[in-house]
Image (cartoon, rainbow over all chains, first blue to last red; front, side, top):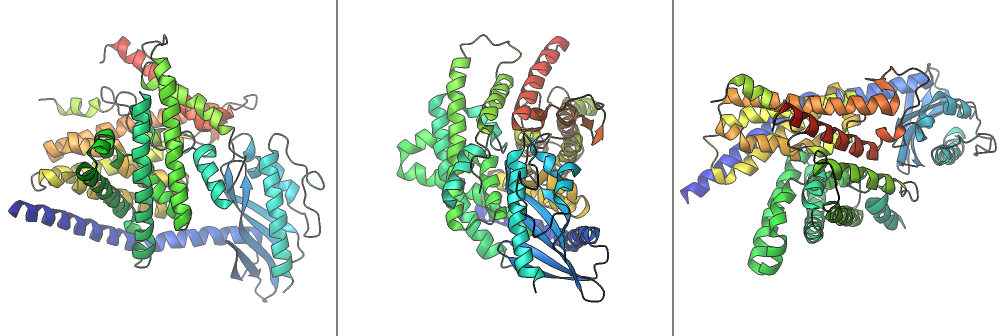
Length: 176
Length: 192
Length: 200
């Protein structure tokens, strides 16, 4: 019995020490992690809209939309943190649309597309085809944007998703 | 429909061994014979489903409400180790036949990274409890499939004339590469 | 009694975790898409292995043999979580690239293997040397695989293009099948090399 108590005690002490160590480490790193994530996103926001002063967040479905305002309080555009279905799973990206409904920026933050094939969506060539399109444009593969041959699933998936996101931004956020 | 997609993606398109690179050690170690592969697969399926449910409940009802998310890894691995021990003891007492068949695989499962991996993936993907169960069982079925395919190939490979330098792990890895190439054909057929 | 130099070098050559013992395969295959990721993973493993070896060796006379495995698992999981927090705070890009394979260092057979086979029977000093040797052996192997896959898969090293514009990247090396095949061929190559050099 004495042995059993010792074993439990040793495990409890080790567990408590580990827990305390982790709590300390968490206290030190958690604020840095939170600040990093925010700084990264703010930098992206400013990249899309240089004169952004403040923003409002709205969650629609599983996605988040940031309405950006300038110093005078005018709506200058909306950035959506959204998702598309690609060939290799989900593609996470930010889409920036200005107040006139023009796409001004596209940033892919995470994707599982095949390197050398599907990852063309991260390259300037594909991004240039998308930037400048308006809410009123059809935004459809083969109509006003050429899908990139060999990667129709990746580029097509992106275009379908962009059309969907443009509808949400145009109808629910810019109209207000 | 969504659940069907989870099953398809977990078993074929994102097969845990060929696409996600988890469980490679048992894949290389246990896939020498068909029966042992099947035994390992069943043991993994059983433990994975139980571990996924318990870790999901602990995370969503204990760690998350108490803001102790940072204890996730340590809590999950202890749960898995405890669970394996529990299954081993219960099986030994209640069903000695099954214990003889699966017993040798159970200690190996604690360090099988698929179990911890799937527990964490369920949390990261924000699955609900039903999705968690379906996903975990599907992954385990995919793991068993990979093991059984490999065992079938290896039983024939043993008779083939392979260079002595490539025998064992080396040729198994190259074979896995070719299988993985085949499984890539499933990706993109259905997405979540 | 082996000398400290032998203790250190065994982890790199005779007991190289990847090419001799074939351990820790999951991250070896998964994170070696680029040399940078491979290096990051290797260094994370060195840190965890070093800390766990030190602590396991320090408590080797205190922990009863029956409960040593859960005790070691707790110690390892603690250091893994700390590495995870530090990476997330100071190297967020690496953290995102390595993803789930950071928490999975807990079940990397190398760490628990060294605790069980070495640290619990040896002094702290020797355990440190052992951890550094094995960790470096693992890091070098991972980086070698990372360099090969990045060089031929994307035509660059550490993100810098080196192959010139005429080079057509072999995309297959950057995805799953490429990982298996490259590692398999390297393993065969090292088997041959070790045999020729007379290392068994």
